Image 1 (cartoon, rainbow, N blue to C red):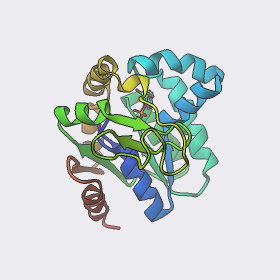
Image 2: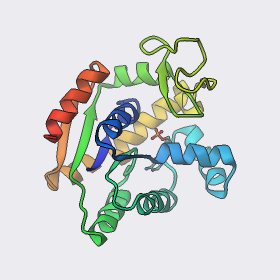
Image 3: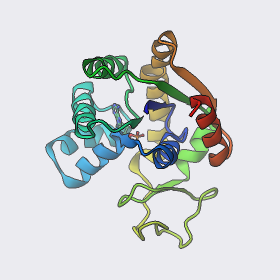
Length: 213
Ligand code: AMP
């Protein structure tokens, strides 16, 4: 399985990638998670990425491409689900070149479609566990104990880039810089469009059916 989970912020890429990775045993690779870890650890990459991320801007291509390549190399033969990468044409071309080198092209790009009002609702109410990455929502996916992660007991946070101004910026960045990739993947014939506004499990079943697995 070599798949890209595509869509605007808040479309559910991380949630669906988590479910797919459990079902198929493929590695869930989120460049956002890798960057957040780098920020938390204060590494050189983290220091560089922090200000872009807080504003909802894209981290420069060369930084993200190096991270994604290193991660893909580290998983060896295992299948993968890319979540949040690629986000620009340059990133997509670099990914294609890397996969071509090992004769393992992408099998599908799953485009999760959700309208903007619902994205804003999801992002503004989102809380995440910084320790294990599990996502929650203040209305639709509450943790059993308020503010605590059900999986690992970590303290849930409201990400800086889930604040209103950064949300609007992220949606604009998606429209301008990331959505043109849909045309790129449509041409290669591997794009699968999925209506992703509904229930998490229902969306998951639709994806599995579209992948024909
Ligand atoms: P995410 O958790 O995927 O929404 O990513 C959070 C933030 O990390 C984004 O708003 C960007 O600042 C940065 N980021 C993650 N993936 C990429 C990428 N492929 N290209 C550029 N920036 C990225």
